[in-house]
Every structure is written in C-alpha cells, then in structure tokens.
Image 1 (spheres, rainbow, N blue to C red):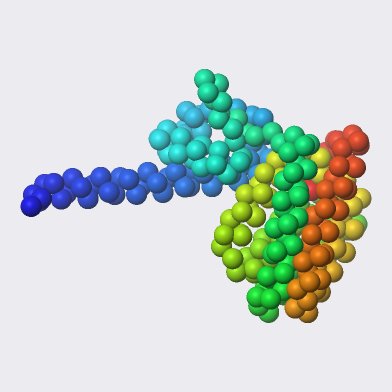
Image 2 (image 1 turned 180 degrees about the horizontal axis):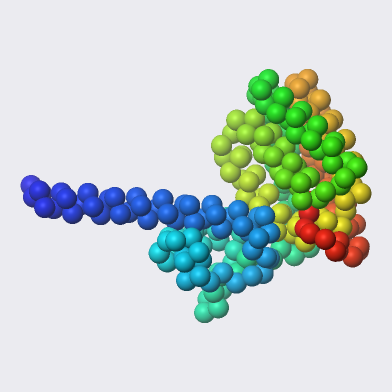
Length: 240
C-alpha cells in the first residue's frame, strides 16, 4: 500500500502537472490572440525566453503552447532555427479558401436547422454594426465584426467537430487576409449586404439557401481579396 508520504508526493505531482497544463493553455490562447490580431507579425520569430518572461511563466508552458500552435497551423517549427509565425502563400490561401467554403456551407445548413432566436438576434445586431461602418469603412473594426458574425453561426450549427475544424481554417486564413484586407475597404458595403442575406435565410430556416449563400460568400470574398493584392497597402493601420 502507498505510504502517506507517497500519497502527498503523488498529489503534489498531479497539482503541478495540472498547473503546467493550465499555464500552457493560457500561454497558447494569449499567443494565438496576438498572432491572429496582428500584434505579432507574420513571419516573426518567437523567442521562448522572451515570451516566458512577458507572460510571467516558465519556459515549459511556452514550449507546450508552441506545439499546440504548430498543430493549429499558426506557427512553424524549423529544426535548429526556431519557431516562426506561419506565412500563408497565395496558393495555400486558395486551397484553404476552398476548404472554408465547404465548411461554411455546412455551417449555414446546420445553423438554419438548429439556431435559436437569441442567436438570430445576435447576428442581426452584428450586421447592424457592420452597416454603421459602410461609410466610415474602418477595416479593423469591420474585421472584428466579421469574425464575430461567422463564429456565432459556427456555434449555432451545434457540431463541436465542425467548430474545431472551422476555427483552425479561419485562423490560417487570417494570417493571409491581414496582409491585404486594408486595401479592399470599398468592398465593406458589399460584404454587409451578403451578411444581411445570410441572416434572412437562416432566420427563415431555409437550409439550402443558407448553405448556398455562405459558400458563395466565402468564394466571392476570396476573389475580392485577390483583387486587392494589386493595390498598394493603406498607409494607416491594418484592417479587414
């Protein structure tokens, strides 16, 4: 039988393991936020020691966070060189957009079937805020609203596996989109109208229409964004 001392040792080890895992999760979430928001630039090298100090944790949780971010497609680990924020090429972005279009179509279909009244009102509130940016065309604010809109829909689909895959794809695309989105602010009113049509279809429980509109929305967004690549970057700030 284990002695009282062994029990205490085992309990302490379990608590320390839980603490390390919790810190790793917190480090992962904070680094993911900084990467997706653009606070950490695409292509930047991540220094384990500096990040550990800035987050107030040991290097262990940071290493675990790096592994999780690598699996999530946000960083790449290069042997003998370090960890870098992933750079998504045009060809990679095209492929990811195709995957997202398929996922969004399924989200639209399932959301139209399963969404509740409160979530529909949340979508309408987001679209109303989007409309307020049609004239001001502040890309950063619009980008945040766009993320919120699609995440509400993804959650309304009531499919955890779908939500996980969707969020990974979105994070990967954001690495690409943030490099070009500020060049296409004239498309904000077009995007807003598309979101309005999506809400109408979902609120009417029209599964086929919601599926089609979301699929088309993603593919059209890809074409608009690619068109923006030929334009010079905006001088002030990043955006959507």
